[in-house]
Amino acid sequence: MSEEWTPLFPLRTVLFPDGPLPLRIFEPRYLDMVSRCLRDDHPFGVLLLTAGAETGAATGTANVGTLARIADWYQGSDGLLGITALGTQRFRLRGIDRQDDGLYVGRLELLGAEPVVGLPQRYLPLADMLAAILDDLGKLYDELPRHLDDATWVGCRYAEIVPMSLEQRQQCLEFTDPIERLEFVRPMLRAARCETTQ
Image (tube, rainbow, N blue to C red):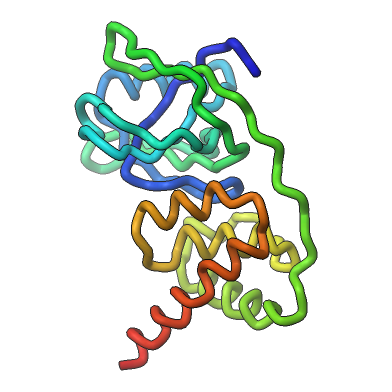
């Protein structure tokens, strides 16, 4: 377990390894955080916010989150800083503190990367469908390396794009078996397809 304190960004979203996260930054605590992360090539931790406000105090978070590295940044037409971060590695929160500037920092236990698992034959149609969906999603996924033969990668992409509750998304993040994750999201994918065809 690392004793280093890592900056945290509690959000009402769930970030998955290898997944993109677009953010618009305007609070001073996060502007400073982004500046330091860019300068030092340091990740920040993304945790699901379960109680409190994104722009105020986070009074509750999930215990498992994902480290994020800033892949791109820009200044929007409204003057706000925009960044795109990419999820890297899952972690378990072992301690949390709030600095004087309001930024949360955490002591993290890094979780081992899920193994690359070949996509079983019965799930191959899901890979073809995912490729078409990602093509339609546009710029955010255009430059994302694709691993459509990896059950972990395919399951994580579906878990971040298929409509479901935040609690279910968090459950997907915490799965340790990629096949179990695929089984979990497949009924939701069917339901979403039925809704779009009605």
